[in-house]
Amino acid sequence: LDSATSLITAAKNLMNAVVLTVKASYIASTKYRNKSGNKE
Image (cartoon, rainbow, N blue to C red; front, top):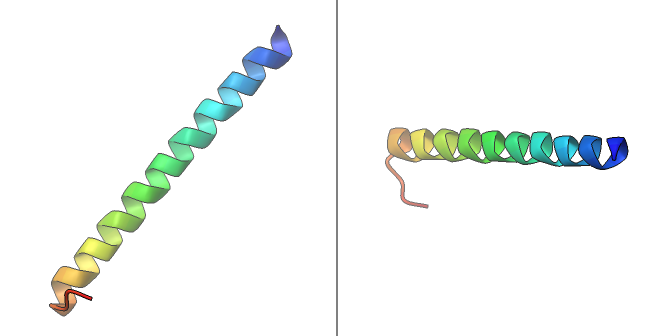
């Protein structure tokens, strides 16, 4: 039971990290596009 709980906790932490990374990269790319003025 303890190993399953720690596994679930690790999975949740991993998902949170992925979400934060995706949000950060999306915001960064959006700012870069708006600043450069290119749609590429």
